[in-house]
Amino acid sequence: MPYERLLPPVLLLFSNVFMTFAWYAHLKHKDIALWKVILASWGIAFFEYLLMVPANRMGSAVYSAPQLKGMQEVLTLLVFAGFSYWYLGQPLKWNHWAGFAMIAAAAWLIFLE
Image (cartoon, one colour):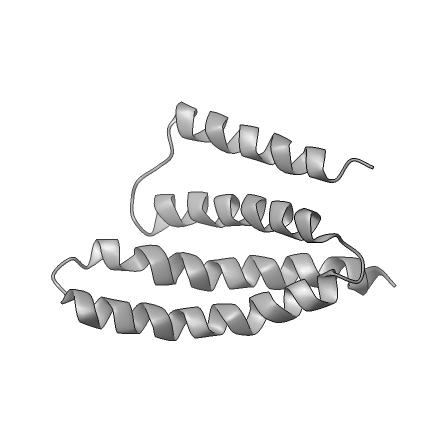
């Protein structure tokens, strides 16, 4: 069924949105105490795990572990690129995109049979 191949990447995408906020949103709020930021990040990361663990469990039925990891890395970079631009106000430069493209190429190689 198509959803077996589609659902894991969708869950990985949404889990990466949560994780990107958990890891980087505090950079816009450096006036908040570090311990508060850590607690808030753990709270946000909990929701990331609620999506990531099922994505990997379900995904392992149709993808190998290296394929799931490669997919997750590419999704992480796409989410981060948007987050960096829209939330942090830090657009990526050509060298960032070039580096991300190399990582995407590496992930593509993982899917070759």
